[in-house]
Image 1 (cartoon, rainbow, N blue to C red):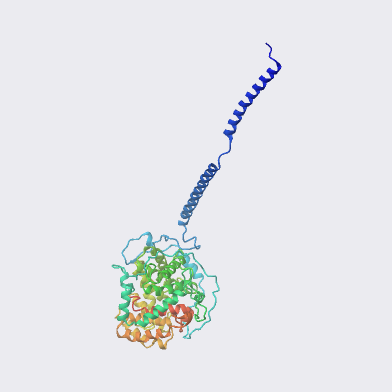
Image 2: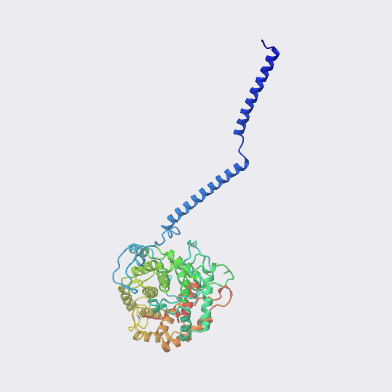
Length: 521
């Protein structure tokens, strides 16, 4: 039976409807499969990616820091300043040494660089005027002047310091006990009381140390000519600048702190000592010469070496040994064939420069450093050439010069350090001569400084008479007003070249004579 058209049309429509339902199911499934990810899922993915990125950045940063530390390890000093001292001195051989601590040669006490002779010859060729020639006894009242050359600055990392301020005590069983054993608090008190000091003299020392601390530059150095540029030093009282020598200024600045028992680890002023010693170490070149010695030349060399030897002897901290030995080796290598030292290395000597080198060598022996025996024998020969009296009681500035109080005092102290016994005839006559030139009649702090040491070592009634004349006289001269409070003005002679900081340092060391050096042996 042939279906009707209406029926066919109905069947076609039903079939199309069925096809549309099938297609709708498929489209619905496709849409369900491809719909967008939820917002919470996206946030979670982003947070994970962010954490991964942070972890990568931290890893890269640590890698760079490690690389920087490795690179810095090989150039800690050189990076701070071109030409600074390296941590290990070059090898050379210097026979016939005096080695007071009996230790064997190690990398920590390596001898001088073989480049010293080249450096010395260059220094000789560059020698200029003689700024420390003896001067007339006219007090200088110079107006403070700005520093002409740009101040040398170092990037200083302070030496390790303990968290306490306990006073230094001399190490038992070491040679330092012979020379520096009076510097701890208990010993100082006893020696002041028994040696002729006073409460007033120690109070003057404390005022002087405070003045020095106020005038130390931030990088650790002191300046002979620019100390008045310190913060707060603007009332015009800190006059009388000296010559330009930051090495000498720093050495003279730190020595009174060391004498009072301060080190880089202990004491009220351990921070000042730490910065100063680190500055001096950075100021050494590879040959052992100080680079900022300026007008002082070998004066500054001796003074800087004394400071390095003292900190080594007081603490027995071996990290100071290479620098101190290099500074001493340069002094040894700079000695003239006739036995003296002067402004430039290996030039004919004078008594004034020689005295600082002798004390540096003496301090080096107490620190256990190596010093040639021949250096002292040659020094004695030079002293023979400048003695003005056949007994060695008085001395001139150079061979053939007339005696002077300052050179006589320095010559006598050098004699003690080079082997004279306290009962030597020349020393007896020399101290009698010095008693005829009391401080009040001879305005020269340089003379007072050396004569006081000679008299103290000689002892007895000679010391009592001298101490009576010097102690209260110095206390009375100390400035008590303004920013200059605690310092000393220059007096005469060499003082005008050194200036106020130099004068203050020597006056402090003079008042510290009771305990600064406890034995001449």
